[in-house]
Image (cartoon, rainbow, N blue to C red; front, side, top):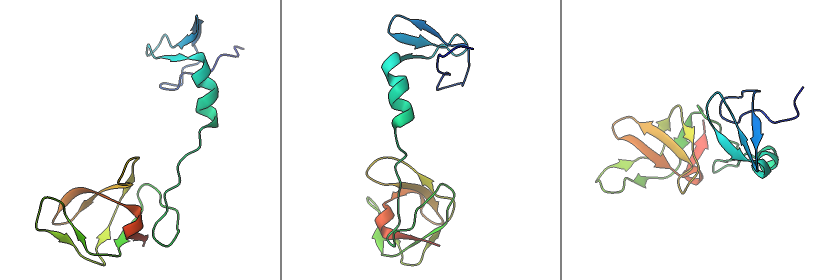
Length: 114
């Protein structure tokens, strides 16, 4: 058995070393040897709603404050339910689609888990 790590992109076991890099022959992904140690120690960022409940992809949330839609005269009203959210990194924690408005980003501090 090889002590080399699996490919982080395709999970192939056939990785090999080339200098200071690991290389996957199946998907041609290359990554530095020191990155293999840091990838396993990284922690997933936990996103919480206004009440402190942990949010996950696919959850349904309710808006707790009227939110103006930037670049439009539309407003997302208090009590609007948003289904099937997707958590992302960045200024806005949540990507979603709101009926009547469309795709937009929300901050987790303005929603509560339904």
